[in-house]
Image 1 (cartoon, helix red, strand yellow):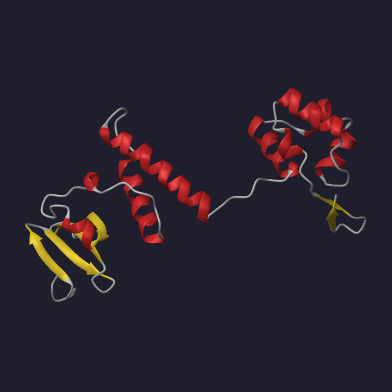
Image 2 (spheres, rainbow, N blue to C red; image 1 turned 90 degrees about the vertical axis):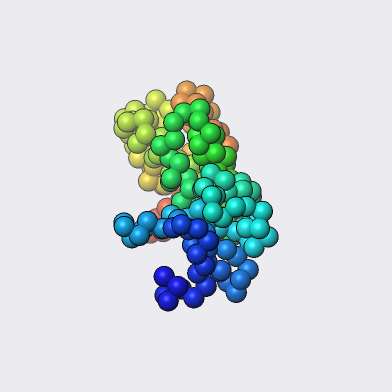
Length: 191
């Protein structure tokens, strides 16, 4: 391994430490030579690595902290996957819960998902609840009105929004958002 990776250092039986990014970080892995596998045991700065015993560290010993980079995000995702089937109420399940929160915070900041518009939202609700356009008549009005609303020919009225929110328990703040309507030529225009 030393021939292939000059920054590798053998620290224990089947443990190898790699210096990364010009010695700024360390990666410690456990190697299963018989299976040709490496298990990540630690990724962090040299300062963090100096506070651990690289010969015995396990993944559960990794410090939990705010995710600040894509590398840390990928490492957290890998650990989430490793812990996915942890027994309920175990230390590993608790660790999974905390990691999931950290991943969610990072994703909310760097990979935000915009809320759907009112019509997309209604489509998701209908699909999720197994509703048809006919079912929507009780909330929107006659069949032709439902088609006009879902095809973006007409906007939702305040009365329709009230019925959808009250009877289907949908968030009115999503239904009142502005959205684009179809013009006569089929193009969308602001409502």
